[in-house]
Image 1 (cartoon, rainbow, N blue to C red):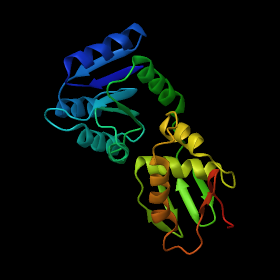
Image 2 (image 1 turned 120 degrees about the horizontal axis):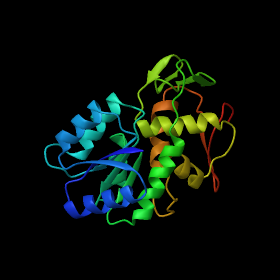
Image 3 (image 1 turned 90 degrees about the horizontal axis):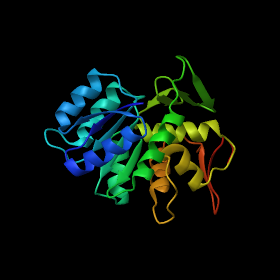
Image 4 (image 1 turned 45 degrees about the vertical axis):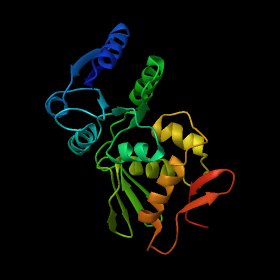
Length: 225
């Protein structure tokens, strides 16, 4: 894999770069957000590791731009901020995964491998449907009753997972692993936060709800209550 590392802390950057090179990854290091964005957009990378607090332009701004221009490029964000809201902000910016400093290198490596396994490119015209809900896997767009629903990258990934597993109850831990690629922490309400985001966009104002809670088990997307 060819990886772009955007990190301005020399010790952290050196730690990550040396570790990845020992595992035979190709790593390009940039210490400025503006330059990192330019490199990510101009060159071909398999994955971006992006710090949040950077000179030039913040990692959140860079992530939004790269996600808009290259929707299939995996992005792992690094930060010292680890509250649920901080994670939501990172994911809302388009990050695929979120790693809180300090971290063990093996954890970063596991996240990279998980993202590389999950990365797939859908063919144009790939549409999935449930009732009056349609999602275009290639364009990453969704419609309900013919009305386009604007979704963030994580919201779309969560909706796609629910649609692919329609009528099947998914536990919070299975959702976390499939969408975020992380071990589920029972103390966080991140999954519930995103389910609520989806309900506001997919169900509210459309009459029949599609997303249902199964108490003690998880969530399911289905036509019938």
